Structure formats: C-alpha cells, structure tokens
Image (cartoon, rainbow, N blue to C red; front, side, top):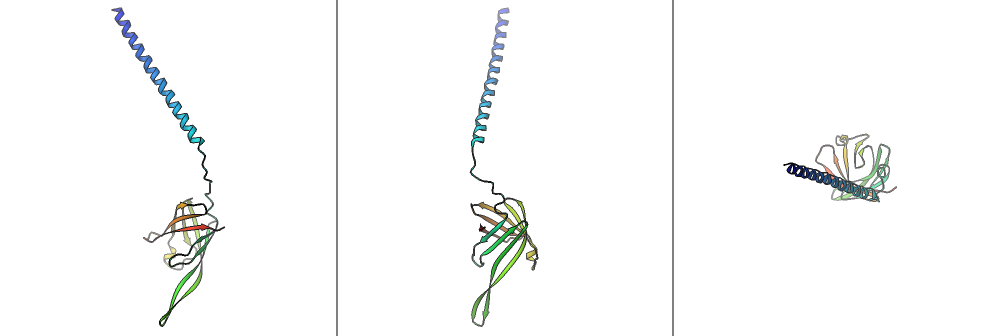
Length: 166
C-alpha cells in the first residue's frame, strides 16, 4: 500500500512540475513576443514631419471655380483675411455684362485641433454672416489640404482645396 501512495505522490509531483514548466515556457513566450513587438514598434521610423502649424499661418489660395473667383487668404494669429472678387451680372435691356467687385472679409479663426477650425465674420452684414463656418480638413498634401465646410447648422456644405502660397 505504501508503494501505491508513493506512486500517486510521484504522479502529483510530476504533474505539478509539468504545470510549472508550462507556466515557465508561456512566460518566456510572452516575454519574447513582447520584446519582438517592442523592437518592431520602436524601430519603425516615420518620414512624416510634425507640420501641425504649417497651415495655421501664412498666405493661401483657393482657385477660381464654377461661379466664384480666386480667393487669397492671409492667416495670422486668430485672424483670417479673405480677398476675392464677386462677379455680378448686370442686365441692360437685352444685353448682359459682368462686373467684378473686389471684396475683403475679415474673420476670426479658432483652431479646435490640427484638422478642425471655426471661422466667424468680424463684422457680419447679413444674418447668414453671423453663423459660424465649421471647417474640417479631410486630406493633407505637401502644400495643400482638402476641406469640407459647413455654414452654421444649415444643410449647406461645400468641399474644396486650399493651397499654401507663402
């Protein structure tokens, strides 16, 4: 009978040793995986520079499009100045002529983060001018970005591209 007890104790010891060995090998496996992941994570070098302020100051241009002329934008601190020509159609009897009127608007610009900002007219002349313009940067390029703009809480939304000139 003592022999049976010894064998059963031996089996228990053997099974405890195998559990300890399994835990030990799992710990080694996790350590090796952690070290490999850390190596790959820290060895990857990003070619992207931190250009977070690149589009926040300077001179920009929105090219002329369907129904509007080229717009020059100058940003400094929390001010944005927009220079553009409004195209007005004038009809005299049976003839139509176009007149270009130069406009300059001054807006306050407030950056929420590097991809979202809000514009507000400094001196609104119409009710629509009182609404903020919410601008979301949707795609960055080397010297330009694509944007989506929405006026206030209306359904009016426009997309475009702004190019940095200076």
